[in-house]
Length: 148
Image (cartoon, rainbow, N blue to C red; front, side, top):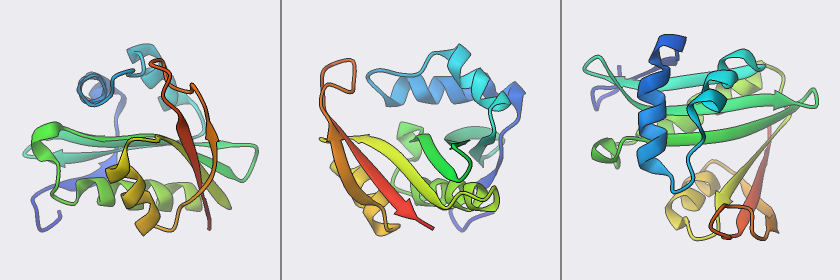
């Protein structure tokens, strides 16, 4: 348990609805429930932040191409933000993917999401390229990488 009253742990399939609700409220183009469910069966990890027996955040990471980890999504419930949960989830998913022999991690982030990019940079991620029109609304994604 952290000093702020939350715990980071592995997600359980029965928590899919709570994860999906956070996804829906966090992103303008959320992943569908079925895709989130599929991540429970893909090599990688889903972790959650739990506070007072409620899921208040999650992180999803997968292993691709042997030693490449892909951080798919990190989100924290709006009323729980700015308490260090995003950092704790990022640290947790980096640790999980590293233990699965990931040598490099990649992620995509909206070019306009300065707060998320700042968090990733604090952990050593560096911008490698941009993908124009990546998001449904046409916004550009920045691809960031971290070598472990």
